[in-house]
Length: 201
Ligand SMILES: C[S@@+](CC[C@H](N)C(=O)[O-])C[C@H]1O[C@@H](n2cnc3c(N)ncnc32)[C@H](O)[C@@H]1O
Image 1 (spheres, rainbow, N blue to C red):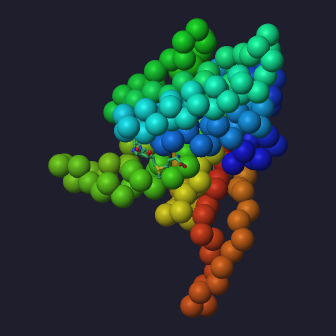
Image 2 (image 1 turned 90 degrees about the vertical axis):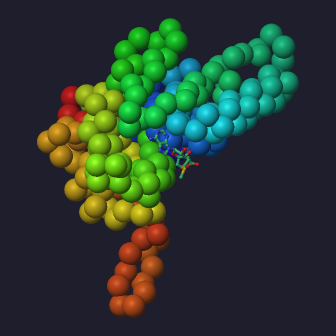
């Protein structure tokens, strides 16, 4: 996903990046290491424990970075500048980044295993699948001209296209990340599907 972002997301001006269901923050830390601006990144998770852990890892990584740099170069523009917030993406608005305007929509929205986790929750009391509302919420937070990149181990590429490339989301299929395929019982497939969608400018 990091390589895909490096290849496709313009670096200037620094893109705003939202990860839905960031867990321990690994993907955002990797993007930070790859050169994306941490002050423009936000990781959401509805688990307060996950957010606490991601913040603790970010602080530890920042301390390591500061210790490696000469004191006069020590900067907060490392992993410590990533925002991690508790938010149920299916029910709440995404919090704005402090001091950064225009964060209601994002240049790059990432999902690594989160839609899979939502789909496992099943149905609410009214018999509606919890994950059904997800694609439209994603569509709302992708900036026109921006991207949504999702990696799933539950949904095939075709299923992801059917769910996310719709008139309601405003997203269109952009590209896929190729993974090695396997064959079993005469059928072939991939363990993961990684699909990118683009919102028309
Ligand atoms: C399979 S984990 C993936 C974590 C991370 N993206 C990674 O790759 O390590 C899915 C994450 O989504 C979070 N999650 C599930 N439903 C959510 C929701 N409605 N709003 C925000 N986060 C959610 C879970 O708490 C969990 O941390």
